[in-house]
Image (cartoon, rainbow, N blue to C red):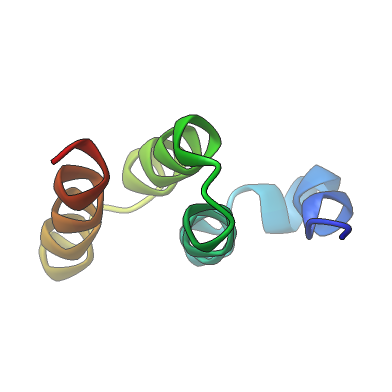
Length: 65
């Protein structure tokens, strides 16, 4: 199964935090936890929205739990 990596390689979408969050959720569903954690961390780095950051931190905590 091909992951949605090519879209993230483009300059504009690569700076879109929601793309990284979606990729992280997909990776987590596949059981690829380390990659999911990295993608959630990328998403966190790219957003200043407090609500989004809280949600992403919760997703990270669930993967670490």
